[in-house]
Amino acid sequence: LQLTPNLLEARDRLSQIYLARHEWNKALHIYLEAVKKDSTDIPSWLEIADIYQTKKDTTSALKTLDQIKHRFPKDWRAYLNKGRILLDQQKFALACSEFKKVVKLAPKIAWGWLFTGISLVHLDSLKQSQPYLKKALEIAPNDPLGNYYLGSVFSQLNQPGNAIPYLKTALKVRPNWVSALGALANAYDNLKEYTIADSLFQTALRLAPENALILNNYGY
Image 1 (spheres, rainbow, N blue to C red):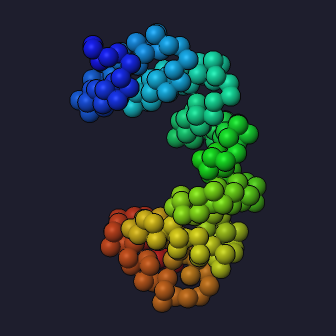
Image 2: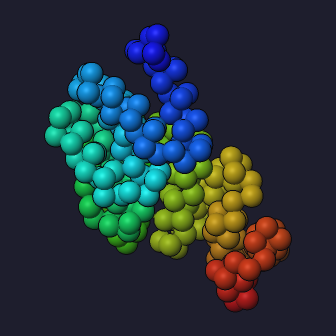
């Protein structure tokens, strides 16, 4: 970097080393210097926000993302990253608003549709979540998270037959996903396919023997 300050690969790899060693301020310094030289360097701004989030300084991460949104209002990435932080904080309505902006700015990106749908699920707006989740799966058909959530929505709407194909796809990509195993078991249980349901519950409990939700549902 001393010899070639704009060598992005060296900058990024050095930052990864600092992050692995939890030397947050050294990693931050690399990207703060980059935006000082070029204030239009959006990837470096996003890295700054990500480093703040990695060091669990959520306030600074959100502040940086708001700065990015103000400077580059048509770049969808800051809205997505802010939405994901708000989703983790269980501020579902605020997160949904950010994700809808991603959908508007970048309709070909699956993430905006997916996380808008997930936010709506957490807001108990199950029917409203369906078109967003379906659109996400049109773009990324094998995405495990999208398949899991859409399958779960169908299960909650008492449509287990519609839920099963999506939950199976989620498990095909992530075979040992306990939540998906439990949701698929519940779907078969609702269809009175008890042998299949029992087998799925037992598989889930082998992976997570203390999972309270699986134990409860299997107990019923």
